[in-house]
Length: 342
Image (cartoon, rainbow, N blue to C red; front, top):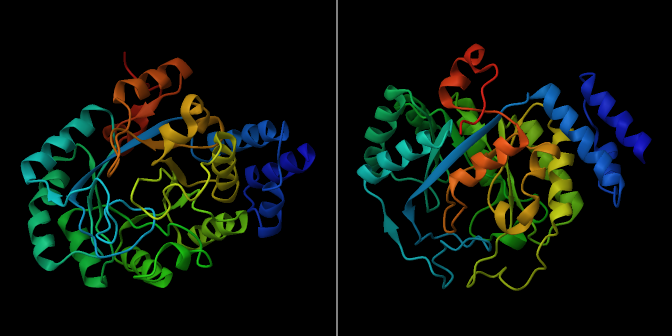
């Protein structure tokens, strides 16, 4: 198996693509061979994406009360969880964006619960997006649910650069997770955003009872859709949601294996390790880079807390892995040798 892993990596490093059969064979890698898989995934990362790591940060500006029944989500009105419907005001949004900038994040996303934004909600968000874009200190991004083509264009005109809209899981597994909208609804929003000239951030949540074939489906679908950033989330089941207590927690090595195989399939995309990182990987969080991850979410998540930003900065300092801020992303020649400061 080690020869096959090396040969497959060689194909990618030479500019080729991994086909479905090769990816399927990579999913059978187990035991000590996993370390070879991680090694080659990291080599692919270094060549195709680079050494520097990027951060992003998010704020859930409209919380809870969602009409959708996504089985993993504590914000759904269908379930009884700890989440109470709430909204942040613009002052809090600007403060959070400033904190994200101070933490070294290159992107800051506003997240709204709900199936999709109303025009009134877009009117309310517009001053924040416009001012953030004009200040040029951090990339403004948005996770607002389903978008019409006109809404996607409007967001781009406000200054939003990137839309996050996850596939979550495969087309085959999706009906087991969500019933209030379809997989095609999600694909439609991604295509509308791409057609509007927005950068696409789309990934999935793993550990929801899916099989390896489902995980490959998501990877190859994202490759076809042209996702620029691929968030890899691991289920952190919240009490009150249908998935809580019904599925065994993912093992750290399986989580790292997902990252590595996604790096083989999506060699030049930004693989962002996001939700569930602390809970699932525990003491193995630093391994995400050596398995092929190239960015991660810093700070808190939507309904759960992350760890302090300084712990993530220290992790990178200890590993001697540099990270790049928004200014360094926009002016890459100035980022040479950039790294986490003490």
